[in-house]
Image (tube, rainbow, N blue to C red; front, side, top):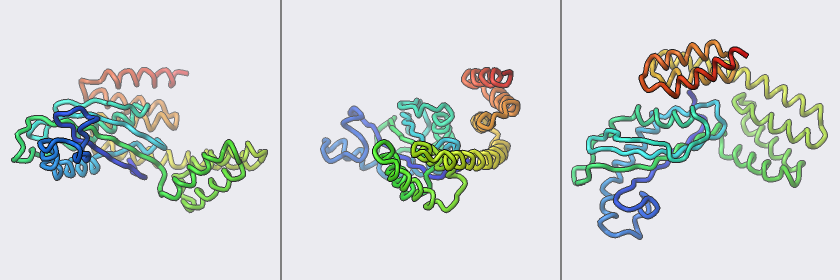
Length: 270
C-alpha cells in the first residue's frame, strides 16, 4: 500500500463549536481555551505522528480527501468515530477509519488537563502526484484546456518530463491523449491511450501482488477488503470474492463487506 504523497491535518475541538474553536486559532479565544489548547499542543503532535505512521492510503486512487471526527477518552482510547466528509470512495474512507484503529491507544491526556474527553477533526488527503512541480504543471494544463489546447499540451508534457518516465504516473498519458484528440492528433491520442493502458496494467499487477503480500502479513478485515478492491480494479472478480470472503469471516460488523461481496458476485456472473 503505497504513499505517493499525502497530507494529514487535524483540529482539536474543546468546549466551543468547531468553527470557533479550531486547534491553531487560539489568539481570538478566551484565555481558558487558549491554555487548554496549549496544554494539548504536544499531545496533538503525537496524535498526528501516530496516525501518519499507520495510514495506508489506497494507491489506486489519484486524488482523495476524507474528513473524520473522533473522540478520545483520558487513556487515549477511541470512544467514537465517524466520517464527516466522504471522499466518495468507500475504500478510501475505510482506510482513514482503519488508520485510527491501528493508532490506538493514543496515550494518556496531559496530567495538567482535567478533561475526560476530547474531540478531534482529522483530514486525510492523498495524491499520486509525486512532486509539487508535477502538480503545478497538471493544474496549469487543466486551466488552459478549455481556452488554449496548445498551452494545455505544453504543460502536460512538462508534467510527464517531470516524473522522468515513472510508470505510476500513467494517468498523465490518458490526460495527454484527451488533449491530443481535441487538437485533432488522432494518431498521437491513440498512442498515448495505448501507453496509458499498458503502464496502468503493469502498475496494477505489481500493486495487487504487493497488497496481497501485505494482507497476508497483516491478516485484518480491512487488509483483505482492500485486496478485494484491488482485484476488482483489474477485473479479477474470482480472487476479489475470495478476498472479501476472508474479510467477512474475520469480523462481525460485516454488512458493508457483504454488500460489496454481492456486487462482486454480480460482476463475476456477467
